[in-house]
Image (cartoon, rainbow, N blue to C red; front, side):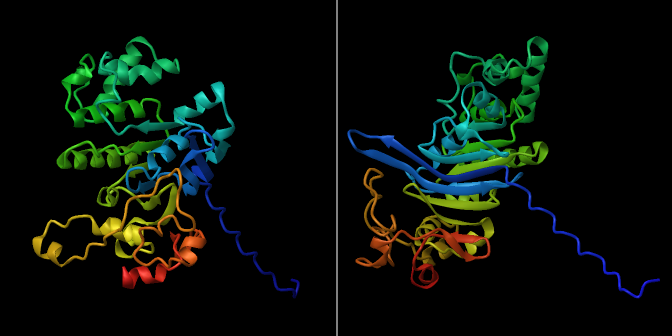
Length: 341
């Protein structure tokens, strides 16, 4: 036997799984007259892993619903890339894009406006199946009834019309339609904001159950941080077209690195009068600036309680960088957020 010592090679680390969705520096500007544009989404990048739920929150007008439509390519990007399962769908068109959309579905915010009142709910749910020439006749009807059963509705309601259902039931119909083609990613565009609180909980529980059953990936858009807490693995906070903070869900509620996130959390009421009376509300000065003419530097500096103006906050845009493991924020003075805000 040779005297040379034989050493086993260390096993190579397993390659990291590619995210299901990659959004790279996506921009969407809407024309608004000669030489002007509304900067709805302005340089947003993020990844979504398979089976993950990413919550996207912010005030009305921050660009979160526009971002959801860019992900599904319901509207084209001005620049940037949306890469779904390794395919840059911003470079697709025509039939190739249409086929890709089978895997990308959306649940709309308004359960009253998103269903055609002239169609039975059976026809509403079956419409994707008809568009893609997948099922016909009895097989199509069976699939529709199966989908109604999956979302908790009577499968024999398929011949009824939308006006015969409550808002929560209509949203279940919208969810059934989104599931029809067995998608892998669903954008939930404020699916509970138009519903009563008790119904909101039912819909969120339904979405969680469906995710486990069908191995779905969600982008869950909301304006209320208390809603996304219970369904999201990670939370992204948007302000005026920019992502200002990204964090694992539970960590975000324990520690914030951006003053805007802290203000949003302070606005959530606590159902205990004694606790509520001792909480400090973070008040923001002024109104949200216009997306036509966003502020220079940090877009939040006109309302920020710790901004240095004149100074770095008005002059330099803060990068979205890691402040703690897995916790990113775009703030020049994030260390002050914990103590001074």
